[in-house]
Amino acid sequence: MTFVAFIFKNLTQRPIRTALTVLGLSVAVGSMVALMGIAKSFRAAQAASFEERAVDLVTLRGGDAIQLTSEVPEWVVHEVGKWPEVKAIDAALVDMTEMQIREPRNADDVPPSKPVIVQAWLPVNFGFGDMDVLEGRKLEAKDEGKYYTMIGNEFAKSVNKKVGDTVTISQKKFEVVGVFRTSNFTERGGVLTLLKDYQELSGRKGVVTGFSIRVNKTTSDPDAEVEAVRQRIMALTNDKGDSLRLTPQRPDQYLDNASHLKITAAMAWMVSAIAMLIGVISMLNTMAMSVLERTQEIGILRAIGWPRLRVVQMVIGEALLLALVAAVFGGAGAVAATHLMSLFPQVSTLIEPGIAPSVILYGTGFALLIGLLGGAWPAYRASRLLPTEALRHD
Amino acid sequence: MTDPIDFLLYADAVAKRYPDGDVRALNGVTLGVRPGEYVAITGPSGCGKSTLLNVLGVLDLPDAGEVYFKGEPLSKCRALDTFRARQIGFVFQSFFLMPTLTARENVQVPMFEGPLSGRAERAKKANDLLELVGMGHRAGHRPKQLSVGERQRVALARALANDPPLLLADEPTGNLDSANAAKVLDLFSQLQKARGLALIVVTHSDEVAARADRVIRMRDGQIVADAAPATTTARTISG
Image (cartoon, rainbow over all chains, first blue to last red; front, top):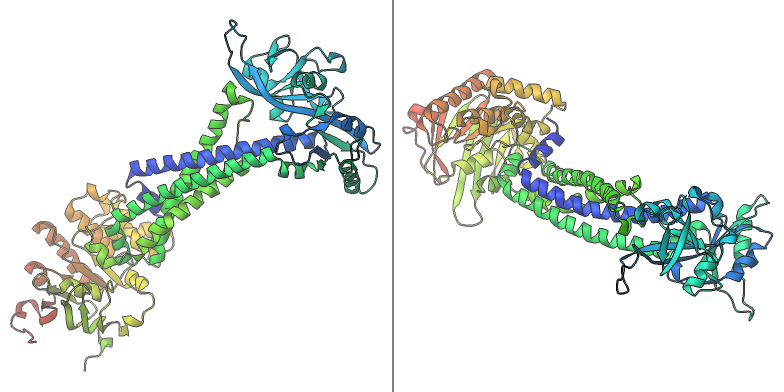
């Protein structure tokens, strides 16, 4: 028998309590892993998209709390696009709005809706070049004013739409001309329209929320070239000479500073902290009860020569083993939960199924920390038991 | 003058007072046990038998006096747990076997602090010890699947796990019927002879005491008699 086998067998002494503790911890670990995974997948999707499109700089208006509220004059996009050091430009008006699930049945009927991310692009956006058109065609300049849309394949699946159908966005019907797929799941889960049409619809004429550019790199120091373009964009002013307050950033910087990613990450951390607290209390309760119930047993172990450290190892080992099992179930549960959630139309376009391995590893570490913290005090108590008093305990 | 080096275990004027009262559980007890000797400690309840056993087994420390093992004072020993694991085997009245472990696994529990480092070695040793106490055929059974007599034999095998030269037993037959008690006592005798094991047994039982080489009778925390079984009453020590 190994020491680990001994620890495992101790946990089988109270199988129901062990199972309930594992269940509670699994929920704590699973919710943390799921939230962290979703937060990470947001960032990963955007990072992958920037990388695939070889974006060098992402520009928003400085000081905006979230990307959706950023407003950059559209003329800036056309101006910057003419610079010789700019190889390509990609501008978008990004919005989150409501899409009607079905048509109203009568004049008083308010049909249910679901949130949808709208990307309104210039017809010349280089993003069009990177997408796979699964059905129909791409939007073109000649489509302006016709309220055509391309829909992401995840979105198409969630609302059961295809080329030729219409989708009602912000109470305006758009005809679907194509179904596309990109590496960015927020794009795959949303709709794409032409900039002019959506500016008209949303009352934001002459405005984009931001733009990305590829820099024309011709020297041996591409970083310096990118930096020069960045400085030039920052120096842009309006016709009165006032700064446009544009903040061009490298994709990494953008992802680090993006408020919506920060908020998602902060929420994930907050839930993690609560889950950790609940987990530690649960573990503390379980292990304290276990030690109390086994006072005599621990006294015997001390009597037959187990040193205090061995008793600590036993109790901490039991807590860690519980935590490890919870990490496995919690991790598996989180992966299953994201897959399950992606089946629901209400959220399917906002959640990518699956969890990054690094998040699973993080969740395992988190669970082990719960085990360590929750097991520490009971282990200390157990190690302080005097064999003679423990043997008298009844 | 008595030299502790002449004994396996020697208690020199040990005293113990419990902090929750004025009761002197042990009051200057001096006692030597030689290798291979079988000593029974008897006396009325509360006379200090179990306290003496605890002090001799280093489960408790005396307030005064000294306990020597092979002539070395145990108050100087820095690793009393390891000492206990390797030099002393304990047998308790209530067996105290781990309920989730099989007999074979129970016997291996002290071995985590013993010299055997391999899992297979420990399992083989446990099997051998269970054979020795006649429990080889029940090695895979858990305590609740065993009779009380069988449990005590498993507990005895556990006490021998690290081949200690000294076995301490507190009422080892207290929970057994006479047939099972006789089996356990036979085992004690065999082990004493075959392994040269020193035995110190606290007991109320005349049968247990009758098998000992010496019977120590205690009263009020003191030894009042120390002699061969038949002569205990004749050689009462005064004071």
